[in-house]
Length: 148
Image (tube, rainbow, N blue to C red; front, side, top):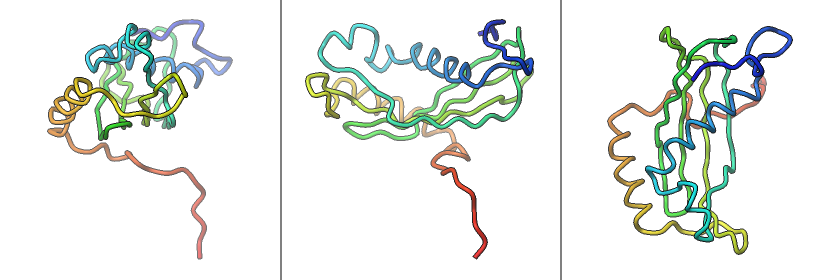
């Protein structure tokens, strides 16, 4: 995906909001493989993102070409934890994104268990992704450490 001109700000680099756009568009590409494609919402269920953390590592500029990766870090019957990275075509990582997704029954809305066929797909994906090391920054918190 190229960095579009309208995504850049007055500093000449990609505005922070568009890192979220790239992460979201990449997730939308893989969600159908899990069973969360566009038609899934019509079943009365969907997904929400409960948390999303971005670490900005290097600037991106207009025209830069990037790829976004996604790793399923963990999951249970109601939640899924993913790690994403934005990679510049020259081989360096521009940003990381970590998400906690929730499976939602829209009649509440409330968090609810996923159907067995989706859990099976997550199980398979997690087994495949478990070959990779846990991302170094996964689960980190934000804060200002204080000396005691």
